[in-house]
Image (cartoon, rainbow, N blue to C red; front, side, top):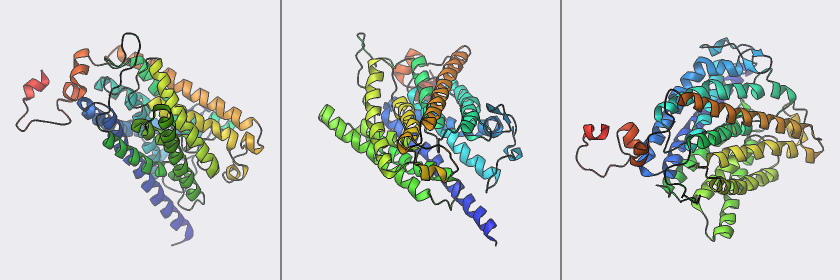
Length: 429
């Protein structure tokens, strides 16, 4: 066996393994969101995650991948590889296109799962399927093309987003915000005078396990984006990922103890996730100390933005926008300030951070890219939901929401207290 064959084999194993780690994150999303919502809506969370995986994979295979990585047209969209990603032959890789498609498929499934949490407990299941098709087939692939494809206009300008703070989390977070505003708050979430009522999570231990699974999967998310098992930066990427997540959680523990006199478990969970989101763009390009700084800022910003959303009567049951949209934005801009020259040069990147003597170029490109991607995610999500609502009501009926989506939409409760048989006719009534 020659070295080239060995290298391709190792890279293939590495990418498939990390893709599987990212796909396992769907279990994390399922447990996290099911633990944050009320018991009567736990099954609906699980079913939405299955929609993400099943419809997301099929739609991305049929045309999403082609729009994202197909032959470039004007820097804005790809137009080759429909129903056949192996025909995309202009990308230089050390692995097969099947392997690369699987890794990218895991990414697109993660994007739609971000939006899922923001509309929990009140979205019509049929409408969610249609939105999943739009997100995985059009909204995300086009934004991804701008940064990550050969010829994408933001990539050509020099935008850096190693594993997706902007492309995945910024886009998904602002899409989640648009969806939460469009669909409106849950019944009873806000009083007549605008005060937010607390909706207690149904199972915080379950949510915690979900967060730990997401944390585990993030090592595949970030380290796997090297696309090479022999890349010398894998260890550094894993360390910055770990430190930023730890800082996000630790800062939240201390901040909530000062602010509320008690450490707030849901906020601490989301604080660690915010740290993970924030470091995703720059995990390969910043120092360990800066990773801690990014995680700390993201953890505290997430909490403050969560409070701001409630003050504005925007109901986001799992904190999708605060965790993903806000932290993704912070992480993307942080690169423009802190990217280190010796680290960016390793991947042929000409720009580096303002505070490291790189000037304003990278910060300007990062800001432009972030603004464009987030505006695209918010605006097209809003228009898509408005279009869907003309054919399928986006929000469930009042009665179905009060009973719970588990029984109303899926005909089965998550936790049965009965020891006999269920009456199918009554469940369908």
